[in-house]
Length: 374
Image 1: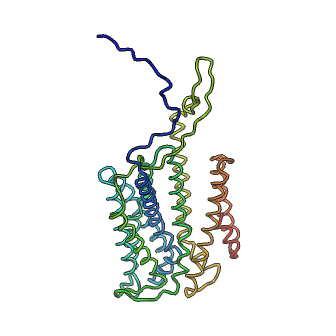
Image 2: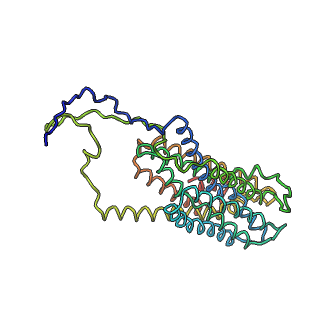
Image 3: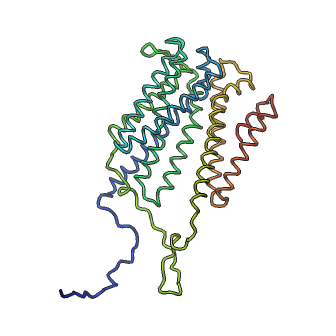
């Protein structure tokens, strides 16, 4: 068979190395991509708010039902257990169903759990067990963080992923650390709706029900399952100067080509193990302070239940703002300070904060605030 030798015309190769625009990536689809990314972050915000909004008032709510600090610890635990279980369940569902289905289920559970939260009120059922059931359902519905991360990964290219994952992490922080300030806004609430008494202790459950209802509506009518990374805004590729080698023509320098070092497998497993231990320690300390924060604040300040809600909510909000400044400092100096150095700084802060709280007891207000900040 005769071979056809076609003449090569190198001048026909375009100089523009930017990614080609997909026919589907129209401005309208790209705009909807931004909207869908907002929806993913919004549902993550709602999930984290289920911890933050109730934080200043849930101990007082538990106390009004005859509960103690032990019962408060149970409330924190059942929320975490529900979230742990649903993380596996939702992950399994993502492999067999759609992201939209998982979001609808998690929002529905959030609505049910927060409505049950209202029925535990002393004016209705006056039951601590009902409050425990409520927090389990809310925790189960809030276990969608891994789903949101997987969805962000699905909708972004490799070079975009870090940016939008970082935004999602910031939303997690905002939902958990800043929403406690809403408790100060709800202090004056005292109304009856459909036989349910809404006041400063139960209003957070009502707010969370509305928030989850909004996410459910958006998932039903706005979320588009066909949206993916093809509709993402085009990112400009980073072209590096060619490096001249002795073996031939210029080659584009690439980290993959220049890097020949690979971590040993056993070192990788050790690193994963260390990360898991540090994560357990950090989450454990966070859960402990989530349990004792308000009781500790009331003990130090001497406030009664009458004015404790607004004061505790304002305190939690201010601590969240300080934490946000720390987060921004990490973002600003992350290129100047190594990741391992940031890890050591964080561990040192935990040691300093807990040392202050332990050795300075009984605490003044400033000492308590300084210890909790660290």
